[in-house]
Image 1 (cartoon, rainbow, N blue to C red):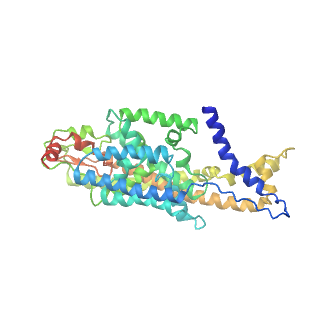
Image 2: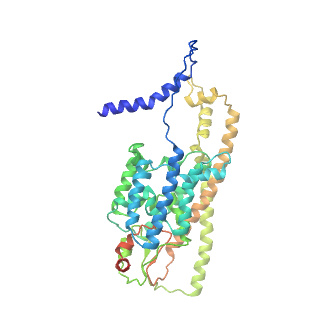
Image 3: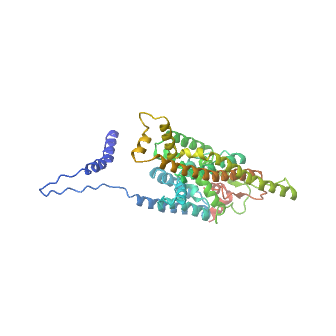
Length: 423
């Protein structure tokens, strides 16, 4: 039975191609008045599905915002997570996703010749708008990558603040390099190294499937490792979540039971802390002066380091690799030219035109790499400074930048359960 279904599937996919190939040749001219039948084939309306995606994305984020901010309940968020995994994950194969859309937007902003579909822009901007209004409701369970990790999470082994902060630098570096390679039209790194696409499509690059499997195994024992330590879109949303108009808060009249903090999968709830290390005003001023010197120094160091490495990064571009291949072939001619070289010359390409194009690409890489290095240096410096700061807290506080609006803390809070029962 399976063999028959495979044969039927192959025939269904090949038959339109065969018909198209046949139509390329002139039809015989019958004198009898014979009229050819018109063939029509069903083509999925991708515009319709894109519209469904955007509408469903908006509805699901609205449901999460209502459940977390108004009802303070996790159950609707859990249901949204299941729907997201089934629809955006397995049915829509995890693409186009908001994470990968970063590259399209970056390229569209820097290259006027690139036309970005409106659908891709909406998928990118809508979660940002909702984050600015209500916090990271997209991360709660609307994102299929985060939802998949959330559904398999059983235990939460807590990492130290130092380890979490250092690992938290990785998604920033990932984001910066993804934009760098996108604006230079070299490659879409996020799509190339997507660990969950292989799982949703049940096939693909073996290495990425293994990585996705390892991340899912890690998700069983610690909260959302991909979201916290790899996702480039998550750190972008964290910036807007810091200034969100509304975001989750600790239950009023907190009894300091610590259950909410233990339940949080991403360690976004800070317990009360009494800073017993008192420093003089002069010592505080001196420390701030050191920070003001240290931070620009880190940015300058990063800029210089990646400025030097910019030319090496340019080898990711296919035109740069092609130029080097042609130069090697010109220096040592071979009886049989490489396929890429043969295709290039057969299409009328010239070495001078290619060299001019490559020169511009390398210039772009050096310029953008310098900016990328400065940003990475500033991020590392800011992270180290943040680790050295000790803030006094008298109550439990939610870190709005880290909170993913999953609602787990509400289920564990006895005061919140009491409030829900009385309503």
